[in-house]
Length: 224
Image (cartoon, rainbow, N blue to C red; front, side, top):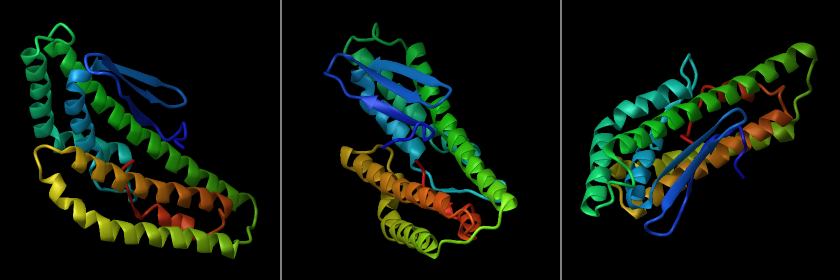
């Protein structure tokens, strides 16, 4: 289940020759992006590159700024993939479906969506910490030991998963192009890390008096 506050890019598959529609939605804004299915692989590869970073939140560091850093990290890939998309359209005689200017706008929109997702995650974390501080100021809280144990267990699971599976994907990041198998591996890795993080957040809301909630903001968190 994807929460409205956990903004996402939803790629809707289509038959060859038709347009692909991508939507990004959150509470206050919806992005709509349409492009020929012919260049779908180039769009997917670029978005996968942007999402493949490792992020640390805390000490003044947030998702949005680090997501902007992804744009620079994937700059070379962006040039190559955008050119590849234009070449594919030209080879197939389909430039009427998307001009070079329109292809450039498609890639720019993906960048805007990526940074907006980072801002959304920053807002989610800030709201959680604010609620936690307000709760502690308003009343004395008895920490639910069972709840803290669940958070700790999920935290350990996430750290163990990242430490075990993360290094296995390092060779993928060095590639200029991702295969379908590479994209699936990156997606599965990110999805599992995000699932464990979300479960931790849900559990922390049940025991906001726990000191572990303060420490979690300093943890390494996955891209989403």
